[in-house]
Length: 627
Image 1 (cartoon, rainbow, N blue to C red):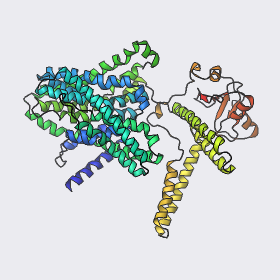
Image 2: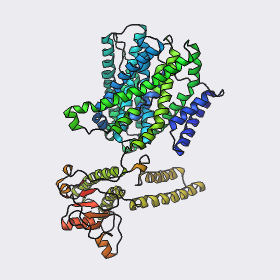
Image 3: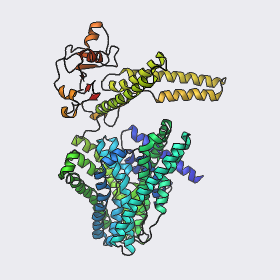
Image 4: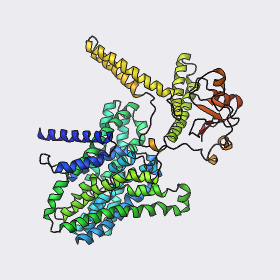
């Protein structure tokens, strides 16, 4: 009962503090660490001891898997070079640099320094992406940080195990190189094998609950076998971390083929909840370690001054080495013509944000406890790991928003997102319409066909409408229909209270209302970048279709006050479009008249331009392309 009460209290604190931090727009991880530090010095708070087993087996696999299934395999492949340079190259670079500093400051064996370097080298997946998404960093930066944090733990753990072996003996170059190869190749192979088997099993599962249950088991199915396989002579095993990441990324990529839509929704909801609880609990647990770490320092013979300066030196080294590595790793490869032609050159501001977003997390604290008990100055090394973890979270975590504003780094453009979404939806809607025309046209009634066409068109128009500023018809529909559902649910609850209808029937009606409410076409806005939105800019004419390329000059509008036909007929419009050939102003397809499309078809003028303030996107009717 005492253990259950403790866990419930811990969870309640995590949820309460996280919710309060979100309400006041402050970083929940940082607040949770401070709460944990304060709690560690309260006598009535139990001593939560983080062990390697709890973190590396209990927390790390689900956290990595939850992040991996959301990671795009396409993006991972696109940015594989910068991800590899950070997750492998930077980890080894940091290990050596920190190792030399520890060796000089504490007068211990170089292997001991390298061990601590491996401990503090990998940034934390949770800390980096939580803060990066909150401040609205560019998607390229977030993707690289996520990819780095998924893979770097594997490099760090292999390096740490090699360093631990070197503390008590000698390690050959063959053992080091062979260990890395076994870890990487073995981890990837096991991850692919697990993804292959689980993918085939999930194709056969018809029940959504069973399918999600298999998903919840997958991270340990990948992690545990990898960690149990040992290669004799190399003192190494496949990386469980890589196995989980590979399995998660592959299964996430295949999910549209192996899962039903409802199963994907259930899986996403479950893993989002698990991630929310574990991620925030991790930061609270980090703070709760401080008292026991400080108490253990009494075993050390070093002076407080020397310990303090050593901790500061290691923290500074970790921060500086990342900056020193990132800029050359970003720009030197682009001196190669092939890479320079294939990849856009990142701005110095974006490179700096990658360099500055190097917060450490729970893996660092867990890994340091892997050091043998007889490791020289072990208690000081543990304190160093804690200082690096908390120091990077506080120093870098608190200053990232300031640097984003100061450097004027644009986040994802909401309008550009809507434009791309609308273009994709237009393409998939055309595919659906083609199916109706080719295979369904004569087999259903006109009323059914009309409903099918209207639903497909409304879905696409709902996104096009978001490019305007006022409340759109789709948003009005969602808002009013949402209020209707609330009234309908109130009536359902009244009937339930009477007890005159079977509860199973009432549950089915309630489920139908819930499903409809969940799929309403609500106007979506990403709050992380809402205050830093940029107007759309015309695309490069050279990259567009021939009609868009030819329509590069904006003509004078014939009726600058509104739609020409609506003004003549006394009608209303939703949004306005400008013909790039003659300057005709017509209303969009969300309007009743659809005069822009009507004019384009009658006059055979293929390109229109948005005639809304702050917008500059164009559309070609012939090639179904945007610019």
